[in-house]
Length: 68
Image (cartoon, rainbow, N blue to C red; front, side, top):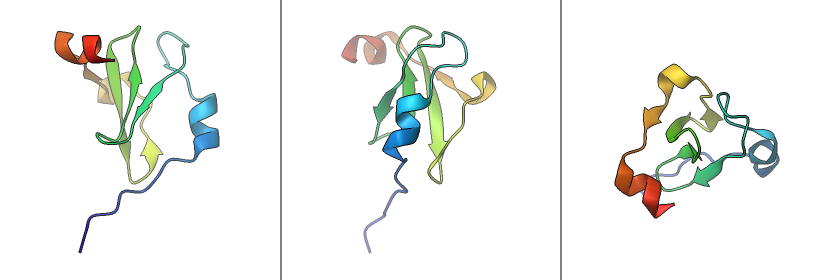
């Protein structure tokens, strides 16, 4: 059986911003993350819920940042 990922409500994505920079986030559906280009952080989405804590975010490496 194929794995199904919970989707994030598009309306929620429109209002969420990076807690550090207050800038819009980019949704990476494949990795289930919200990307803050300016902060160079990726916030995880777990069970369809964005985890908007800096402590939970992972740092983007140079290649990921340039890819965006």
